[in-house]
Image (cartoon, rainbow, N blue to C red; front, side, top):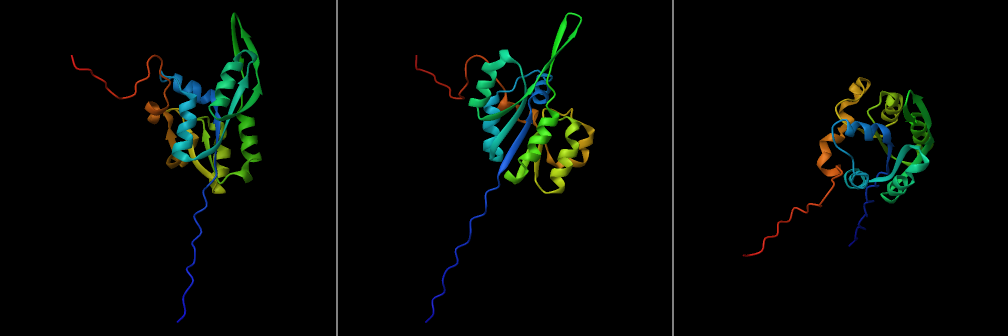
Length: 187
């Protein structure tokens, strides 16, 4: 009697997911809705929901924001810094650090290191990147801060996740932390 060897099935290969985040677009987009993002919770969300292995955060570098950069790195982001310019208009100084080219460039540099990419921005400047990633089947999602994202993304609406939909999970809350556990002692 012949015994058949059991063939071991190979476990499905876990996809490698990277996120590429336009920090200014995300930050200003949620603030325009009246709330702030908790960067630690957002990184945790990316990991838990999508299995994001690496999250590249593109941000303008201002020397006095070192505490913020340290916090972001401790939260698990890989910070990619862009030099900034100070633009003076009358008495108002605006710090400008456009990160679009860096985000596109780093996505292309990392292309062979991930299976799927998440782009976090509602800025239409990333349309050609999204289109390319979709065409080569390396695109997972476009996370936009809110419903006010570029109309160029209409053909990719099935890929869009609005971050304001998950506000409760990623919002920065000040004051006492709520655990959801009620404790009442007997009188």
